[in-house]
Length: 402
Image (cartoon, rainbow, N blue to C red; front, top):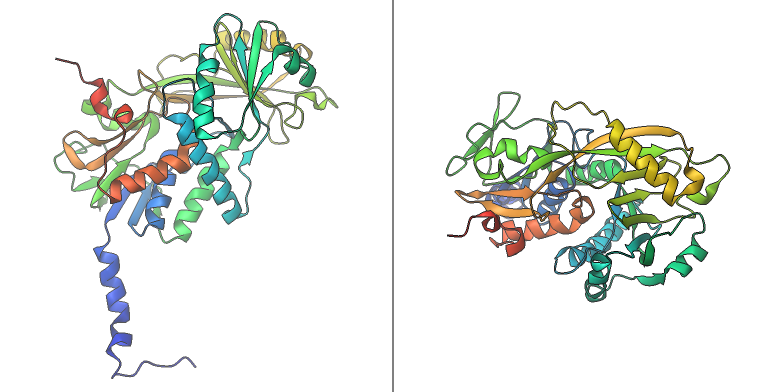
């Protein structure tokens, strides 16, 4: 039988009450959106002792979300004059840390190959210095070296390349769910409910209305709602974040031919007349190819997720050119996702301009997923230490100069 505390031991009797007071004294933070940005932010906040309630309308990594789908690319090559190579370097360390902690693999280190065009290689050339500074491993390869290493690829029009051996692709949907599971295990509260836009731009924001008719009160609010950010904050973000339709295609690799699987081919990015990218086939999915060109406006809630025949035709032509043996590969799966796009493709990490207890976190612009662990860590520090984000992510960059 466990010992019963004696009445003469006030510390023993007061311990539960003291613990309750301690919990109440911690800031209560509501995080709306359980995707790559919101889920990781909630987890880092909870690990630092905050009381956190995480909300999502359809669940972590759901099919409507920008963090939905099976895979996303992990890479450090980003061109010159940007903060993302450093952020990716930190994210790489955090992905590894949490993989060890959870005994799960999310990052498949197939390597990432960048094909530098003979016409314009400024993106790749400008990436060299940031990769060095961030200490992300990479190798510069000539076209001949690439042809020897990956003979299944047609390198016509490619002058040279960058190969990042420690990067590759991430399991998207699965990792979103694991982050929320870890958050709950740490004592966080998760509720699968939508937030009403009514009153969100009030000053200050005292509570949010939920889809079950209840209200949630918190000290701080973090909105990480991807393509819904403009709908929730039409005055502030309606003209800044736009949702665009992005078609993704998966092709079947030839039977018995492993040349186009992740055992023998890296993830690739190809800067030609258009920017195409892809992920080799695996035991989970087919050979993924996408045209990164921004698509038409798209409603993430009610939009029908049917790919464009014109985009499919363009992708097939690319596939035939760059991977000749995949010329007649069957289309085995399609997916429509969306980018929550800003005009300059930079993130938005800032307080609401009129409501100091509201943080706006979005504008992933098609490249945000990989950064989730590092951006969530950054957000937790900013909120708990009352900090300010780097200028490149602040809303003031969109204000017209007078």
